[in-house]
Length: 221
Image 1 (cartoon, helix red, strand yellow):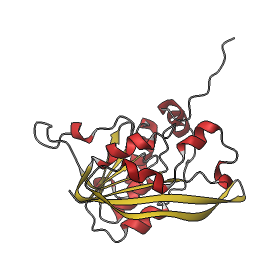
Image 2: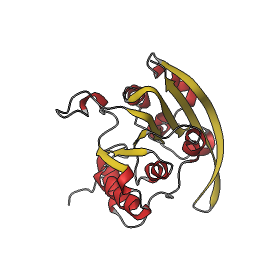
Image 3: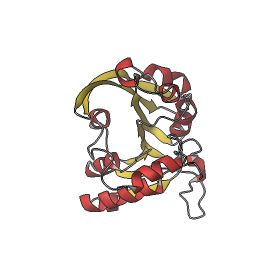
Image 4: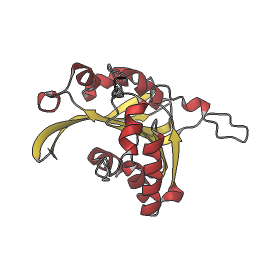
């Protein structure tokens, strides 16, 4: 009898399996720090990396942004596209299947010959947590996709004890504080927001205290 293996939490197969099931995985509501930080920005083009079921992409579209949702799960992107159709904003959304760990905006051509790369006025990720502190490698890739004068917004779970108490060491290592990210910003970015924001959520009927590690930076050059 062969053993059944559980897909690695940090890899594509685990998320394909999750999004292939019945029922909605996430709340369908915009992440609160996205709404807080972006509400004062002039809508333009936006990229949401690790978009999952697309709630943030859809919200951006309703606010006037031309929004791209990116994820390594084809099943997640299919759910997101259906949700955008249902919300009536499909024409303001497009979808990109890519792995944040290897994402390279310079290969996404915008000209008639597919050259020149692609940038967005806003690049954001919410609760994208690559294994082993991998955000240190992902953040520069996201920053490279920001247009001059545009913004990079990264929000993640802080490794506070009330959140990580039941996690294994590998998942704990994937969490970060906002200040941990600053050293990985390329030159030409200025920090606009650097904050730890407490938030209370209800999980399985019990209240849980979280902190949203929030970094907003503007590309100045």
